[in-house]
Length: 474
Image (cartoon, rainbow, N blue to C red; front, side, top):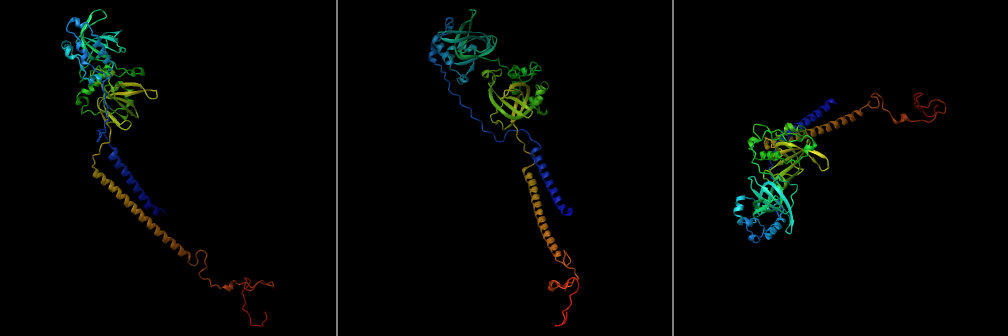
């Protein structure tokens, strides 16, 4: 048995060895190393819906009777033009003024050339000095005065009451330029400056210069150590400053080529937030959700960039929340794994879809890329050679096994035939001995019962006598 089973055991060992070699080669080719890179074939970009035409229409003919050349003219508001602009301002929705060519107003130009600019869409950002609701025959409106960064006064009339705005807040007034107007303040003094008729006042912020270096004390006021602190809004001044730095800093300063970018898990960032705050890193995960959102109320923020991409990355270690200006419309939710390279900001507490509190690591990313397997340096031709050798070896093993099985069948038939031949030889398996005389059928004859009481002739009692001549006595 051992001699016959040895070739089979050797073949099995050879087969298992080849299988192991195939597994090792596959791991070296496809599992040994991978790196993020852009997809070779770009995915189709979803078409953005075209914005509908605005309902607001300013009629220049209505504004022809407006005068502001003298002091008396600047103290009056013409009823018909004012009501016309208020009605059109009430029809504005987000994005309409941008369609009309919204531009930041120039105080000197608007006061010096008011006739040419009347009805143009303009905006101003400044500090809210005071506001006062007014309701009369012309309808409900809110009067306000805004002081710009140069200390000059701007007047505003809006048709929607501001929400939670108090004097001292930085606001934005956007609408149609009416005239150079001397507005009466609550203390009976006058505010002389351009008058803007708009839809509402928005909370805003003064624009900041592009940040090219991080301040050492930037994160001193960032607090995220418990659920209450982590649940505070993300869009703080520190957030905008960090976002400006990540988006405008030189590439070699943000990601030095001599420094390897380390990938951190969400769990590590959750547990040691102070240790990693402000550190350059990479986070990865399956894209759970992606959306292009307004940065700040109606896009009002210190950067002046209205939109930002917001990506939720899910991994075995937790959730990462990534903010980036990079276009992420090509990524497929719940299908693509994303690598985000940037700077860790803070922890953020939110409520998931099941109504349970959760923690996400907030990262401001410069680059977001789809994670794909990198092509191995071994050429495809060499890979096919290796696979061909393995295939030929498997075929040869199969043919050798087939030949061995045929030989075994022939040998088995020969053994069976030899065994049958041995069973037919004298003296084997109960046959007569080799020296026994031949027997005849008469030896087994029975002469009937013995009436004389002796043994029957031919029985075992004695030899059978030859018969005598006829008539002889018995």
